[in-house]
Length: 205
Image (cartoon, rainbow, N blue to C red; front, side):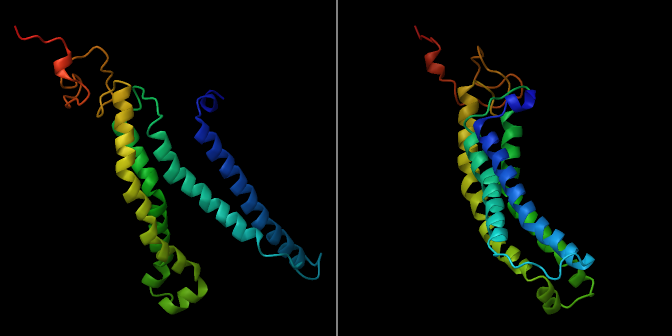
């Protein structure tokens, strides 16, 4: 409960999107599965005909949820996150970059593992593509999944580092620099870019 109280507004929206997409996917996939079991058990003669728009709608909602979570939330959170001792700017930047690249990484893993039967010689490539034609969509999406991380990596980094300087944190280790006038972080030695030495009252007599 305490974790939920610390959630930001975009986290609540993310959880709402996941709830809607999970419900839509469950409704679109579970009902045909239950109905097919009814046909197998002899409870119903045939599968009832239903409009085919539910599954594409659920899939589109799931895709929008992934885009929101892995692309938009890192960009928004990079200027709003509150740093603590366990959440250094360097660690949060690494987490954001992993989130930005996660759709591409997942699609790459699916593509590689899906072709294992082809690699082992159990199926020819043409036969495997006939069995699972959707894999062509995943492979075709790989170049496009590289575009958002490459576009957002540097704006996210710039916003997060600006946020760290506004909170007087070291941009590398997260050390609290309040009251420290050195041009370097006393914890890790990284140079500071938020200290204007000429404003520290240095008067040359």
